[in-house]
Length: 520
Ligand code: GAP
Image (cartoon, rainbow, N blue to C red):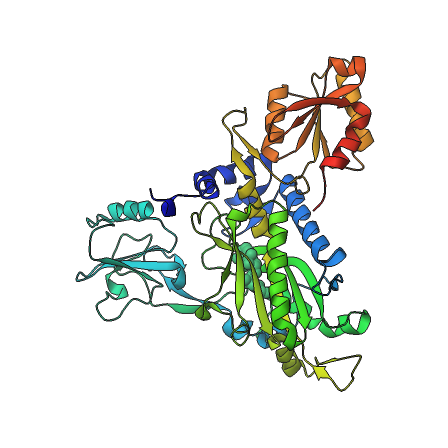
């Protein structure tokens, strides 16, 4: 292998992590369960278990801290100004007409007449052999091995690597020298020609408000948290002391009737977002866009994503959303998930939305969205917006994938290398045996520190099994109470990653945790 082809350590690590193992650990230890599991689940919906909700809340709280309670220092050396809101999931349906979601929030879809499955046209590729009639539709991210297996299953004798085949992104393949959809195998089909032409499919879930279910009462579950912020722009300006430039942040649920919910919690139909709309003068949009690019990348690496697994990617012109077309464009922060490795998948988008949303809401509501410069009342303008929009639940997945560390040298065979600030439990208190003084001392220690730290008191089972459980849930420190504790009031501290042990005084445990469980 040449130097250029050599894989980095992060690439290798992430390609050996198997999503099946990560999903299994999440279920086994109570991070993430399939929603409505006892009824066989519901595609695209997930529940967060006792540890998953802690991890998700920790990520949410750190984001909130970085954005709202302790926002970064801006280019002028002063902390920037950001306030939070929590808006309704269901808003007046005119919101979504103004925002463009009713008319435009749709994906091109193809249906398979045989399997009744529906695919996003832009997530499929077509492989076809030049000069022959057949083609195979595959998912964009299928690797060569998966494609080879698929071809074998279909009884297609051509192999990847045979000369004369070509791969085309997107399903609109009918064209000169290309087979039409009537000569195409769908990704899951046995018959040829079962795929339909692409059709647009709106991603918003709708519901009805009130007792009568007519079209007049139709409303939508929000597909993004951002619009609740734009709707409250005036209220926030009028009720707080913020002045442009400033930001409004929100964390909450969003709903999209995704065509192909896939890859565990990466793309689900109900998920959570962490979005901030930064309102600034149009002449400063570029400066602020660059600023937020850098800040957001800093955040993800500070909380534990290895920088080699994080990258920035500018959107191509044809990928830009309707609101970003006129502006400076959008860049994504991407993470190398095990199912995208060696490639990357989107984690957060940083978009220049220009003044699209405020202008649209002004037009549709009749309410003026102009900002008046307090130093110069003649200077009125509709601010531009820079939007860092991250997935909270997708962030949880990135953190879990990054933390998942196979290790054959320990009984669990794996541990979660979570940053202590994110770990659901900061420490476990483990009496070596369930008899004598061990549980008494352990319980006292637990009662002394539980008010300050999320700690687990785990008394039963052999110590190896208890260490294994803590390793698998990412607990950074285990304190073990043994016979020596009874005689000299010291405990052992076991560090998760190295498994190294040292003894410290019982009365130093809280101080030890204060020192080691630092926030970011
Ligand atoms: N307000 C802009 C906006 O919503 P987006 O790129 O559609 O932009 C922002 O969404 C982030 O929300 C994405 O980067 C991703 O992390 C997360 N996200 C979007 N769709 C998702 C889905 N179906 N499941 C999980 N997370 C999703």
